[in-house]
Image (tube, rainbow, N blue to C red; front, side):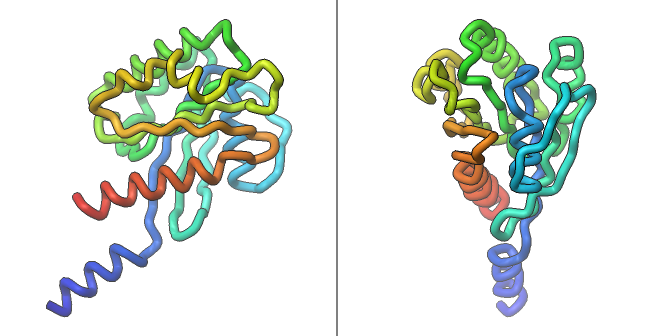
Length: 184
């Protein structure tokens, strides 16, 4: 009995570690989001060729976030980061109406991969500060998120430069991944 209680207590209160893969088309704001979460400030970024990886501490969780470049020539490399991913953050430039179909296609291609079958999906509808940005409902529709019947997903409006919506997204990730870890 004592051992069971100790195990339960440690599962509830020990620091949790979560592996997060953050992808999206190029110039969606992935690297800006990563360093806003990590450092709390805006950093000057250049297009990511390869990846950035940082640990983001939030509440009682240590998120290891892999930010992988989104240029079309390197998207085939995304699959090399799928293994052991618990949460997928897909970042969309809400102002880029011309490429939202391309974003949808890339998202659905990834979600069909067996290695991501258990990963929860958080969509960051980024750049909400821009006047012509699509809102979360419009992006939900354009990305075909309602068709994801076997996937636990959530969309969060964000502005990477101000940080608006980022921690709400982490809250959703932490509660949804933690419940899967705890109850499995």
